[in-house]
Length: 218
Image (cartoon, rainbow, N blue to C red; front, side):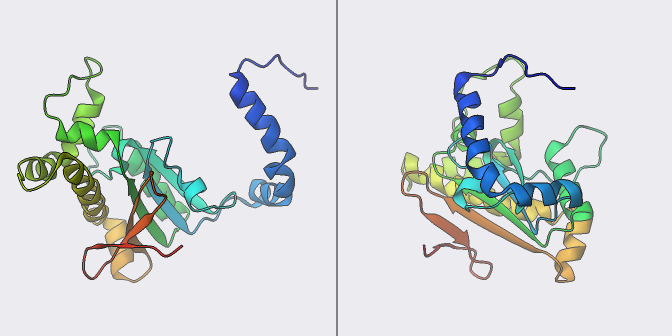
């Protein structure tokens, strides 16, 4: 027997849930039941930023179970380091590639990323004594120093440049994972990059041949 507890969530969330149950859930009820009984089989893993303005499920208009998403500050993929420490992103990669057998990995960055801004601002005061953001963004220390020292770019240009460099850097780090590199070499998985402009809604895809970003036709 179940009882209805008094809601303790913020009103906006309970109202949103009610709208979901009466709308999207009803339309996709069979889909949810199928996913519950048969499990998930997404073909694509998206590594995205945890920024609330750049949700992959919204940007790509996906159905439940279509994409497997891991989000962190600045959509960073760390290098392969089986060192006994806690690695949430690496754990998600391992599950998506080894268990779910995804055939595509997309690293998606976005404009006006706060993590990237922190990497460029060497004088930024840590938000706490642990400075978890600062330590995390040290993964981009070298490219950040290169961009910050370029006098030919404006502040906004440096921001965009590092956002896109971070995507390339994460793709290279993906190749340090032995099982990802082996599957890519065998043609069983593709590694992709994209950059989303929050203000315009434009999506730019990384061209594998040139290494440049090209606007995706909508």
